[in-house]
Image (cartoon, rainbow, N blue to C red):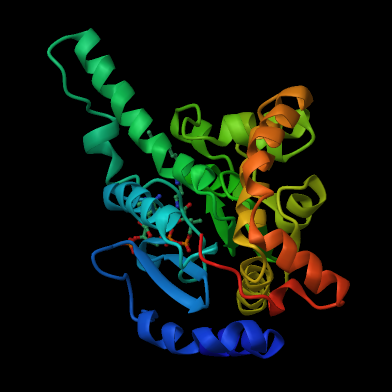
Length: 310
Ligand SMILES: CCC/C=C/C=C/C(=O)SCCNC(=O)CCNC(=O)[C@H](O)C(C)(C)COP(=O)(O)OP(=O)(O)OC[C@H]1O[C@@H](n2cnc3c(N)ncnc32)[C@H](O)[C@@H]1OP(=O)(O)O
């Protein structure tokens, strides 16, 4: 199925995708996690596009200890990789993720070490900060991240997707801020980011306080996702096509857009404009502007331009 999906995206973007075809075959790992990772399958389905697949389908991609660490390692590499301009995140199997691995969390999260309450609490704080980092690295990564959700997206899954830049889902997808059901306040990003993704504060409160499921249509209507696809195959084809559109544009422009959108989300308009001016006083001097403007004047797509690596 993946070969078909990649092929259909390739057909639509031949000029961009064909040079990367050999790379796709060289790095794809259809069989399972990509070593040294044990929970992630990482491939390059097209030029400048990295695909990360959560890969524990037999456990519904539940987030075990290795996952929390491997996501940080993976995104740290991606942030610095000039051959990657955009990331697609998806889940293997029928379910995006069942959230935190409830069998694995007991040892670390529920039994922090320490000689007294202060030391135990301090250790707990470090553990929580480490878990938060797993999704904060997605937001800090200057490359846009498109996430594609099928089936369940539970607990930690919502923390994950709210740190991504573009959310897509299938018609059978559902989302659940499940944490109150397991006796905790969501603490790795949902309570901080979901209110900035969904316009309605009331809806966010309802979802987080009742742990009710939100299905695809409501997710679209509320703005949690921007597109709903009939099935996983169509969604992955759509995600890869979108990634191709992004990867074909100037990385200076694309990464500057992501960084400034996130900065503006968390600051006043005046602060955002000030940051933007400081950003662009150097970035506007890129050769990409002249190249892109010339192509635009000639009514050519920016995807016809070869941009230097960033
Ligand atoms: C500092 C920490 C911060 C992080 C906090 C995060 C919190 C959260 O994520 S809260 C949410 C926790 N997750 C859940 O409560 C979901 C539990 N799972 C389910 O409800 C269902 O599995 C699901 C609806 C996702 C899928 O149902 P399906 O019928 O397709 O599969 P199952 O037969 O239930 O499961 C298949 C095997 O996967 C194992 N599994 C599923 N979820 C988890 C999980 N969260 N942790 C560990 N293992 C999980 C399940 O045990 C089955 O395994 P096996 O029996 O060996 O086949």
